[in-house]
Image (cartoon, rainbow, N blue to C red; front, top):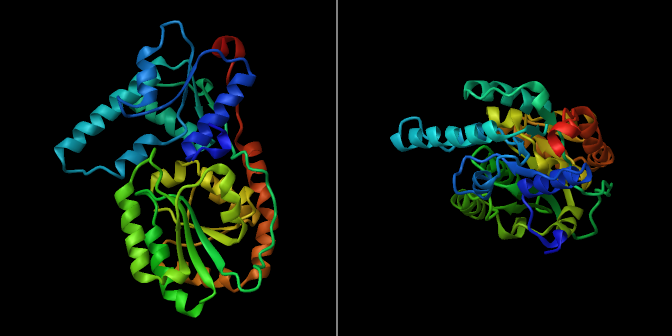
Length: 336
């Protein structure tokens, strides 16, 4: 299938770009994303590897921090799940010849995590390879055509470590005062990443609080379709819960939005949120209704501010790649 027509998640984008990077360097071994699931495609390939085959493992997700947000402290079954998750990750750590992460924070996380798992990885065995989106950076006007609704956008998956319900609550209170604005959810549920029930709960809440004239739910789109949904978005909103997952995450969705020229209102503490806010392409908000409402009102009333932010958006991915890259990969030892 043509890459532009595939419905890509952040994981798909990461995997595609890293494979391309490794191919250019002449890598003839196996590249796998770390997984906690014994029945995942990555775990199955790990089990099938020949003993002399080189393996590069991508640790770009703080995987235990994500999983912990879906598990109970009290259910015996969840303690068993934790044990199995750790055992699966140990297999990747023992077998890998070299490891990749997407930012320096993740390298620090995996240095400590590998040590706690009893399979310590040395710093020179972890390369920081930050990947972008493949999107051509561009600027756009924030002035919609006459009669066209102005759009506030939620883009990407809805996961337990995010808070789209807070956005729904805040926008629903403002909608009567801003009848020419629309809240658009683009993506939300991806079949490869799950959390269908959570997505359905958010959609049900939104439809109960916001008029259909001011609300859109657009299914996950192929890459070549994204542009038309970004084009009329005045800004996007990213509300992440205050967790360790948020601090260590690599937010492909933010790079995609920013490269498309879409400013972001973010509560995130991740590297990309920090950089975008510092460069002026994103506005910080706090994770409470009063703050989100206040900042939504500011942006909805500030086309000139949005235009200024828009012009700064293309810088973020370029600066991110420059700031984070630290390759420790040795061609003779790791690639052939």
